Length: 343
Image (cartoon, rainbow, N blue to C red; front, side, top):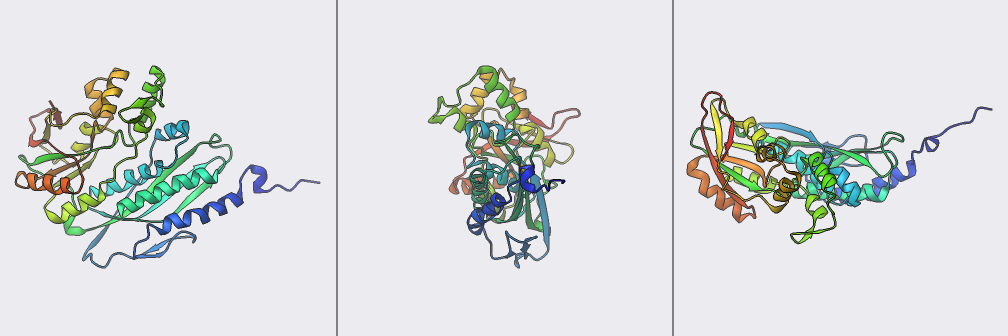
């Protein structure tokens, strides 16, 4: 007689999946906005657009946290990686001038560990609270044979809304405008393949003290979410351009918002690299140009404003808890000149 197989024979735990849904519902409820009509539990979530928008434009973004996950696995710390996931997505749509509305996550593993998954989703919910967006759905995929036991992968999806005539594109940036930088909390979620290689080659002890906490905790610090202060700034004064400093660093991301014929000239003395970046450069023997290409080097978000608004913008953001640096200015670009110059 031919044996009858079931999902459990393939290693899939349906009961665990059901248990996870019930455990994450309270986390998701803390993020709900008034516009949410139906959230986690159905085949699809429903959300109305806020009525205050006259000509709303939806802005979407998707991202992950890369190999920072490997560090979380090694340290068995899963409570903040979800904040990283939200931050990478909502900061990206924020730079278009969008208010994040809702977030979806994708959690994939070989064998579902409900306790670990709940920690991850609790972090996602916390990130959504910080961003003011609703966690309204997602997918947990259990795929035996695809992932090693104890590991998982994450992806996130954010949708926001902006007024059509207030979209931020960088098209209004002109020579003479001022470039401001908002402090990062560390490497955020980029450059971790190089970070892990440096840790491996130097045999660094992740448990060793490092400026008030362990080296591992410093490297695992969650990505900053800039939504609240920057949405407020956009209402207070004209913002010409925003650049989220992710993969590609300062030299790779600022050019994405600059019109042709312009360059950003940054003063390398305008800010001091946080200790973690100094350690990475020294321990890894990484050239300064490579540091600027790979890491945010202490600047997680760049803001471009008119020179007349620069001091007001600095005060406004500082009053809301941001560490703000006057990094430099926008200049005409000579033929063949780099789009970002740091000296």
